[in-house]
Length: 176
Image 1 (cartoon, rainbow, N blue to C red):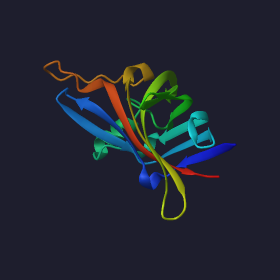
Image 2: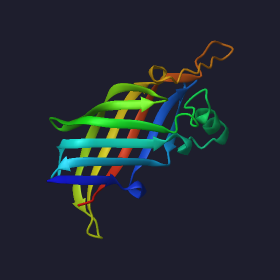
Image 3: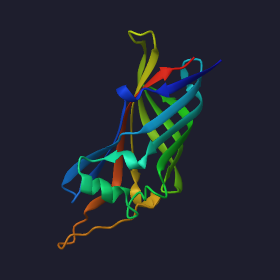
Image 4: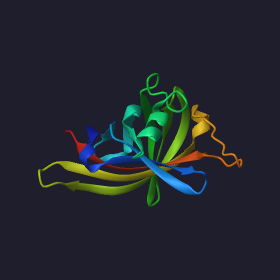
């Protein structure tokens, strides 16, 4: 039997981290996103569909000017490419750890990636809803996805690193 799971946005978060001037790490998040997973029963390793989207216009780094730059044509180009998409193909058990492999699309460029997953388990909340929890992490090279803006300081230092780390804490609600 197919089970549908949908994200509980009030108990989830999607973040990214990037080096600035190669000396500090800036954290950002997406305020609007969606995730749906279809499984066989409650077995996530038997997922038939994993679909994630994040609204680019919901990006926040707690700095309005920087957020505007990230939404501009120089970075995500939110007007032309309003969403970041991930279509997962395989949820695998790797001993005590898990991974999800799929296709990530940013700014119209699609590349395969693998995401590390820590499965938190399944629990029933006080309202009788069955929930599953996950911690996800990974990294990408932004330039491979068309995020090619290059800032260099007068001293020749890189302003924004190519490597982007992403972290998500996700709680899913069983729909049926």
